[in-house]
Length: 396
Image (cartoon, rainbow, N blue to C red; front, side):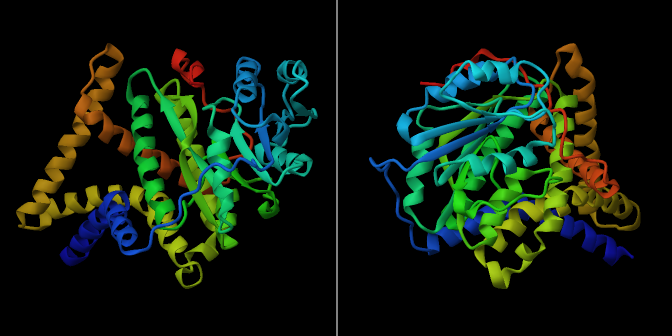
């Protein structure tokens, strides 16, 4: 029994370390051992680009989004902009109609974002599709930065960077987490491919588009991973970025994280061939290391680490297990204390990143059970976001 508990303890530590630190080190070493890829410049003969923006009940933000889109630095005769507002019951479609430069697709039935994208793609007249969220702001050069990479025929999609602004509190850690994720994506893309684009801003070749099941929860992830399945790379371009504010509260952030986690488990079930490292090679290595372990293994390792160290505290004489259990109890206790003090304006800064890490993994576990129960719909009410002046000042 002690040997089993020790095995669980050490394997939990190994998977947590490997997923969050170790695999990045291994990938970095592999990059140093491999040949460097060619860097591309923006081509004067800009390829035609179609932007597709799904907007559901965005009347409070859609005009700002339109102005941001029309201000993008890209040849106007090579840029088609489509807004699809299916199911919107507010004035979003009416606001868009005031701008003749924008093509509007609208019908009264709401079937979800995935269905909207499936419906909009056939209306695209250019070979490169750019998709972004209706509540994000883009930098002026983002289309140029995405489009230049399509000079490489091995690249099937290019994802931009997601930047998160936050005023304060635990949700501010979302911005720090995305900086960490961005660093990992740079490594993944340099080695082979990123494994999952963020829907805030990504692009793809239209001829690689595959109809997405309309019950898909994470459409952006599935679209990009199916391009990887076809043998193409998904590149990462941090100089093209979308900015949004953090969730308005911990409750709103949890709602979003749980949904993403449920979608992650759904995606893994539909991407089983990606586990075949003999077929997909480097892409499988990155997918398993970055995504599968992050969703399907590490959250449960946190639980197993606590439970195994608790058991070993009583049944083993080795000091390391006693120290490990006491340290976990101490850290979790500080997290509880921080949660109690935060509403009173008192925060423990050092503990907040760790608290967000644990919070994120709890959301993944909740998402797993939601997926198993079939309770997560593809259509949902998005999480409320903080309102910050900086979000309106992206064009520079």
